Image 1 (cartoon, rainbow over the protein chains, first blue to last red):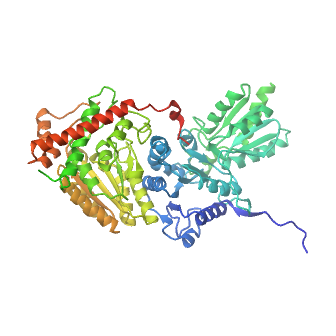
Image 2: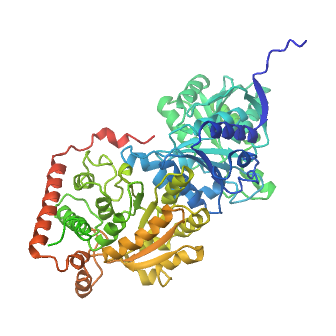
Image 3: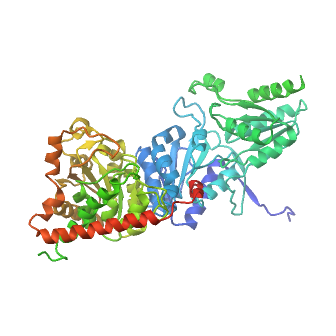
Length: 332
Length: 307
């Protein structure tokens, strides 16, 4: 007889964690519907919608034409009229075509109607570079952080992919859920019990006393790789996974940097008006003397050429370089 | 003397109310600036006469006529446009954004063409939940140049949404003449490639608008899918009260001669007409007084209902 304790979690692919959240929420709430390109029989470009049309039918899983403005608008209108839709925009670059209904209508509807209309909508979209070139690689989540009325989440683990999707599908919204091409095939333990990750709470992935690394999405893995290597040189890193970009969990970041005295932000998007820039300034309002550095993509398009792509986006070497420079300049 | 329940009495009064409302509103120095519906009353009134209580109307920013025609009271529209807390949007929407979904006016939206895909989404919700309503989206000729219309027509057609698209073609997009901006001979022809029924009617004739709209709305209600109606109308004033008019006095005089109110009231006794005018003027004056006495929004409203 085995004496092992009963399992409380199960290893899932990141994409399977999304599918599980969608399945549970669609079963729980008949108002949840899905709209997207190739999400029916095809199952989604990253297989995250596999099986949903068989279970919930084509009334609730709607394959759309290639028409991002209308797709987002349909989701916004259906949400404003009482459903809880999820609109899948395959690549974040294409979300630009749907920004009018998202920014001009969804983000403002509750305010401008004096609370008569809310827009419980989730827009799920995939960011990040993985060999697909200049208009299939961009990370524009910082643009969305600057829109009052939008919430933005970006999980890095399978458990958070599951728990944040569930939170998004129960939120009065609108919520933009940003995943990443390189994350779908990663695995992680996901609780067997139904679990919701509240929007607005960062997670501490690793602790150390010398510097705080703040990242989200795929860059959390890059940050953890950098932290692991720096440990061998005796540099300890706190690694904070933002999980939610709007609202930002500045309390968790500030607490960490109050202890370490230094922060490096890491993002795959642009530094100018980027996630790290915003966090750095907000941090300064609390901790005047914190040493800060930012790591992000080069100020250039992301090529599909693998050498140029790798040169453009941050890797562990660049994070380590930034940290050594930051800590070195202090001790000098 | 016409019977107050007759076919023309109600729409005539509704059009006169819009005209009187706008006249009173813009006579004040504190109206900000407004987008007026004068001249185009027959489109809003005819359309709303064809709609039922379960239906929802979405309009462009030129929304005073549609809001009043759909049944938001003059008191409430006036309060909203003058920024008072007693407006349906609590004074936070104002010009171009008035809404009251619980009476069937889902709302105005001041991005040209911006309400088209939203309206399709409202229609999708009705279809998914098998609600009895039909969605009507009213937009100007300017929106017919937008990609959103093409995307909406296509999806509405393939999904057979209960959606009636109504173009209020008032001939001008700010100052750009429809003929110089849009290629189709008739704007309702835009429905043809999608296999949808379309019709173009005289938008200065409230009965013609109502009858054409009713046919499409009732067809959509019976599950026959979407349609597109073009109403040829005339804008009496410039794009907004803050913009100049590029039309000549002679042109404007010709346009005003086509007044939809005069057309419907033709043959009505002067006494009846005067009584009706006094009635709508009193309603508008009372609305102004109530709005003047109503409170402004609390400044905390600047940050409320955001997240």
